[in-house]
Structures are given as structure tokens and as C-alpha cells.
Image 1 (cartoon, rainbow, N blue to C red):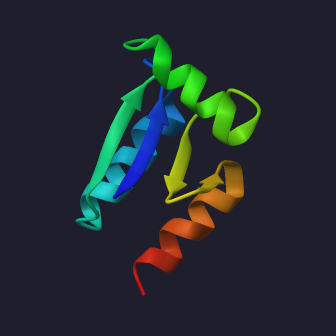
Image 2: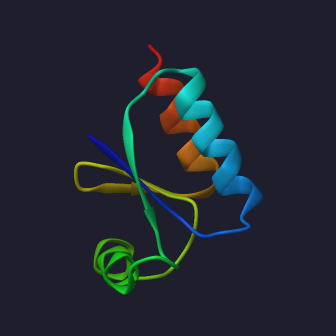
Length: 75
């Protein structure tokens, strides 16, 4: 299952969540403000804290690459 790392007040995070819902793609949201361990997980996976970050198994997608991955998931 996809994991989406987010923070409160992030408009890009909100847009990604809406798009995943529109596409009926299941995901687990991991809000960095709610659990410190989520921030640690993201640093271990991506070497930096960038949100939104979409994790598909072991690959991390951020920025434009994240939107490209979302489009691939619909095909």
C-alpha cells in the first residue's frame, strides 16, 4: 500500500490526498506533526524532510516526480 507523508497546512499535501481519493487509490497518511517516528522514517527513506512524499514500496516520490507517479498508477 502507498504511504503519503504530509504535514498540517500543506496545500500540496492536500491536493495529493484529494487526487488519490479521486483515483480511488488506497494509501496510508503519515502526518509528520502527529508522530515523530514518521519524520525519522522519511529521513531514512529520502535523506531529507520533503512533503508531500509518496512512498511506493521502497521508492520515494516528491515534487513533479510524485505527480508523474500518480498518473502512472491510473494506467
